[in-house]
Amino acid sequence: MTKTSAWDTGRRSTRLRLRTTVVSIAAGALAVGTILTVAPTANAATTLGASAAAHGRYFGAAIAAHKLSDSTYVGIVNREFNSITPENEMKINATEPSQGRFDYAAADRIVNHARAQGMKVRGHTLAWHSQQPAWMEGMSGSPLRQAMLNHVTQVATYYRGKIDSWDVVNEAFADGNGGARRDSNLQRTGNDWIEAAFRAARAADPGAKLCYNDYNTDNWNWDKTQAVYRMVQDFKTRGVPIDCVGLQSHFNQGSPYPSNYRTTLQNFAALGVDVQITELDIEGSGATQANTYRNVVNDCLAVPRCNGITVWGVRDSDSWRASGTPLLFDNNGNKKQAYDATLSALNLNPPSNPPSNPPSNPPSNPPSNPPSNPPSDPPPSGAGCSATFSVNAWTGGFVATVKVTAGTSAINGWSVAMNLPAGSAVTNSWSAQASGTSGAVRFGNVSYNGRLNAGAGTEFGFQGTGTAPSGAPVCTAS
Ligand code: G3I
Image (cartoon, rainbow, N blue to C red; front, side, top):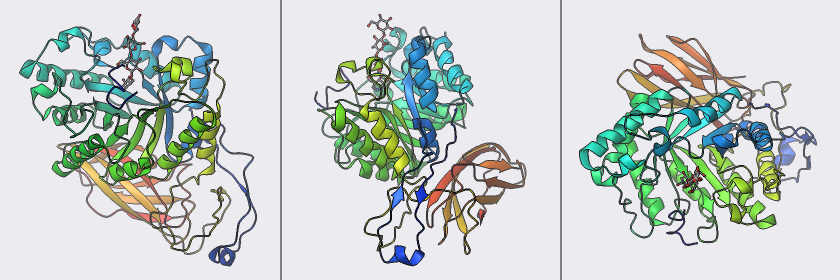
């Protein structure tokens, strides 16, 4: 399949901690590059979601509402994943089948199931040239623009507070050279249709992360990747509310996993957005397929703002490309080699992101499984941390993203104090435990992100009403 034809044809986290049994290491020995022997652990996380959660990330799947009565399917979903994307149920033709008449029945079945299981929900998708209902396909110009914005507003408002990340706009760029926008009825309403959709989504659900989602944006050298990058850069520069970029990452012979994939993730993240792998599937089988899944996981874990991976289906037979056997479970629901590679990549990586400035003389053979967060460790002497934050603000509210970085020693926990202006209040937070909602507020680590190696960082966020804080956050390590 060629690049350009790719689409036209078409937990409850158990909070298991990654543990290792480690030979004792003298600091001096590490400094001279002694080879370390590390035995992997008896207690590594045994599911994708739990292992991803140990990294402060999610591992999700796209699911179909009509399969929720299939016990094998639901068993895998509930056991393995801590995020869910409705595969088709939130698309425009499903949620607004006739203009002004909204139908959330199928999407609600998925959202309710996910929430009952403590899973995140990725919303997919609010504005797209495809899967439009007939009434919308027949529209153009200003009436279409208004109908699109009304759709975004109604659906995002209905699901307000229930969606972790929204694919606000899907697949708006053309394939091939040049990086032009895709021609569509939405594009013909004016080039600003994308930012208009993002602004409407932010107003409707200020707590959801707002993503631009596309395919064939994995290879850093492709024009389409560059074009999406420039759009996100422009949005960030002009204050258009965007929080994340989704890379669909459907890999096959015509659109293979690129060796510069990590560079692409890093470059998008450097714009100040989260990066999410949103529709991962990798055609193939056996060790080759498994190795590509391993590479994708390693790339995501190497980029602090790559905060989640979603596979596009559960069993091979559930895939939109079933004949390519692109998923982690076979038709009978058995784990494939690709599953084992994915889980072991999640478990073998250290549970926090590597320092952004690694030592210039790292050990020649670093441990593949370094000691991780033994709960009884005393705080190392000289431990410390720092915190910086960025804000997306609008009239009456804001979302703050705080980065916590360990100092020159590893730390076992952290707490960040911030002062909110009078009249402002914290309404929710993620990846941290909040104390207080107004005035002097404090955010402490949660179970999976307290332990940070020297120089390593983690992020948490909170949403508030009123004016965003402006003073420097104060980080205290434990
Ligand atoms: O439910 C009807 C069924 O009643 C009918 O008998 C049958 C006949 O064709 O169609 C069924 O609906 C199909 C639906 O999937 C559910 O299986 C649609 O025809 C079919 O077009 C639809 O395909 C979906 C496709 O998006 C539509 O564009 C795929 O399931 C879904 O995996 C795919 O997902 C997209 C993402 O949204 C965006 N990125 C690419 C990705 C893969 O194409």
